[in-house]
Length: 170
Image (cartoon, one colour):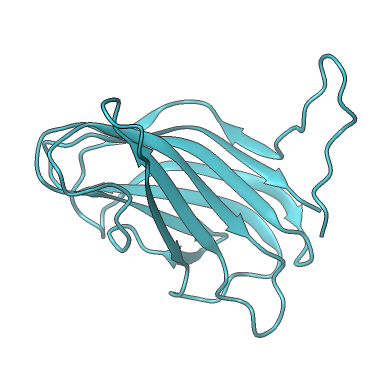
């Protein structure tokens, strides 16, 4: 499938189908009580249409623990909060961005949603990349909602996300 954008000209862009520009943060340490960062309504996205979700992430210094991002599509939890570390376990501030690629939903390929976070320190030019695939459940066929939840590894660490954008690639 080819990704297409409007012809390049002044003032044009590839608009997201859903977005949230507000920074949301948590110091919650419970996966079961994970803080909801954002819940986005999506136009009914057919199974044949892939999506790309992008956003900014950061964690503060405060303890030697990582932070975790949970991903839910419609009401199906694909990556549970507390299940996949997004940052290192080093006591330091880190920031970066994340991407969630949701491919076409077809039989036998339902567990292929990929989550990648790239973080770095101001003092280092070398990024750290964390990546995983959603294996908790099959991805729903038609997508109508996206929820992102966060868990901090320690109440002394602030975990935050901002500028979430969902793009249709179909």
